Image 1 (cartoon, rainbow, N blue to C red):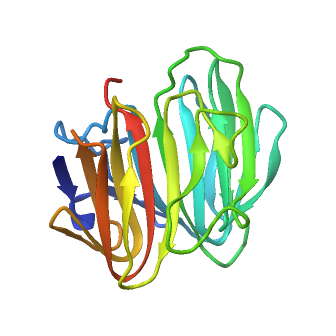
Image 2 (cartoon, rainbow, N blue to C red; image 1 turned 180 degrees about the horizontal axis):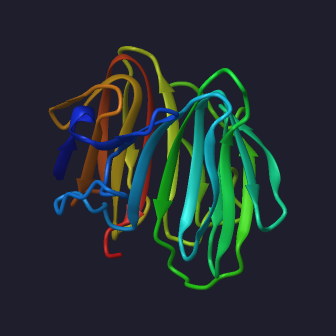
Image 3 (spheres, rainbow, N blue to C red; image 1 turned 120 degrees about the vertical axis):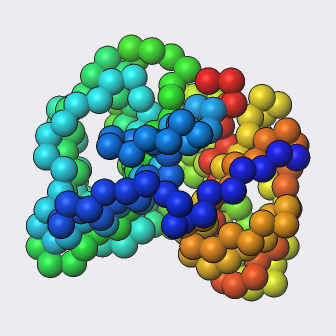
Length: 237
């Protein structure tokens, strides 16, 4: 097993008053040649947007863009005609494909919204743009990893144009569990949203990340109640 540990306090970031953003991988003005992604996984942005503020209309193409709200209300609008609110317990995906314009605003005038925005390189270029938003409430079982994203439209959760799987779990202190990587050419990037866990001798605290490759599975010990996201992605992208 090969692992690369990314401590939360080593992430890049930006602070624009209304926006506090931390970047696990190189993004915008933050560039580190050692941190330009993990295979098909190119961006993990941990965003905090103040009330009434947000990202105005901007464009993307040929990228799978996943948003996972952690608290507050994320208001989405796009050139495909989709408009609405995304909240904690939901997941959103947008396949930018041939090109799409969208905005992401705080849906509340007072309370901040916190969310993860994740970009995955697609395995098909210039697809027709698409949007999907799904509630995860019925999918999430405690003390296990629950699949919330896959390459398969028939699966529960959302799907993207890539041989990738995302799983989320809420774990109680003392639990030990093993995650099996889904495809032979894939690796897993573990992002701890809250709590603390140990994987392969690494103690992971909130917002720490661990890139895992050259193995078929890994075992995680939960030190304190934790919420953990696993992004299982191709490494040859």
